[in-house]
Every structure is written in C-alpha cells, then in structure tokens.
Length: 217
Picture 1 (cartoon, helix red, strand yellow):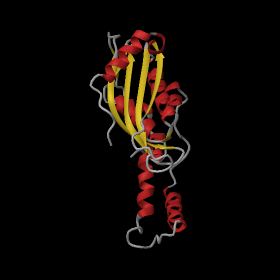
Picture 2: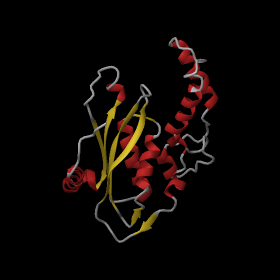
Picture 3: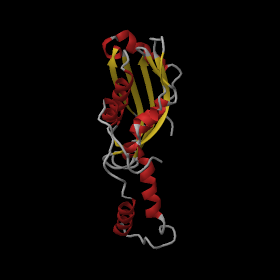
Picture 4: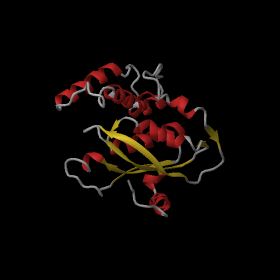
C-alpha cells in the first residue's frame, strides 16, 4: 500500500499528468466511524462478533483500493526509460485491473491494452501495468481512466503515438439497477499516429483482437 500522504508533488508535466492528491491524508478513523454509522443505519449491530472489526477492515481496504491518488509517478517509473533505436509498435495487452466506480463506489474490473510508437525512448515492460494500476486504484469512470493512462504515457515518453483500449464489467450495472450480467463496456483513447493514421490504428486493433477471449468473471 502507498503512503497515506504523498510527501512531494513537483510542478512538472509528469506530476500534472498523474493527477495526484498531494495535500491530503487518508483519514482512516473517519472512515471507520462512517462505516459504523452505515451499519447502524441499515439496522445492523456493529458490536456483534462478525461486524466488530468490520469498520477497521473497510478502512484499510479503502486505503489499498484508493492508493493510486498518492503514488509518486517518478518513483513508480524508477528511471526505467531507455534510449532505443526502435520506432515500431510496442503493445502490452490483457493487463488486468480493478477500480471503483465513482458514482456508486462499487467495483468495475477488466483489462487494458496499451500501445505506443517510440520516438527514441522505450519504457520497462512492468511499468505499463503499474501505470494502469496507478490510475485504476481511485474513484473512477472508465472513460477518464482510459484517457489518463494515454495522457500519462504521452507526457512521459513523448512518443509518435499512444493507444489505450479498456474493456470492463461494472458491478453497479450487474448487481443493482439494470442488473445486466453480460454487459461489457469498451473505451479507447488514441493519440498521435494512432489517431491520425487508419493503418496504424488498425494494426493495433488487429493485434489486440487476435486470440482475444471474452471477459469472464
């Protein structure tokens, strides 16, 4: 779990693109008190054995589920960008993620496919899934999540182009409301050559559809 407060946010494009909460701690005690009030409000007894430690558990869980607001992007990348004489497509596909819908605070989960066309700089393989996690571990909507991943990579690497496609299922539409278990949502964000060139965009989309399996949960 990330520290509850980010110690420093520098005024740089990379920190700006990370959209962090730099000046606030997670108030774990306030979350515990609020959960206890919810238990009472729904008619439960927060003092019974099964619920006695629930407020603390929920508080700690939110610290983990929302840690993306306070992850230092420079430490995350950890100097893992490298000069490379390579300008063909790099794709990392089927990156699993878990997030919380900001409207109902229920999970949505799925997979992200990320590609870029390098312009002298490449990034270590493990960093792209970590970037996805940095933005997914927040209160989110899928559209914003997709755009933030793309914008961060575009700012960090200044590549020829960036493409992100996110597929997810949303529990807010599965277990409440419309209750459609098989509904899937797909969002995309294309920058640079991926937006301007139909051939480049098609190559990316063909690659991520090849051998793809339906989301199963």
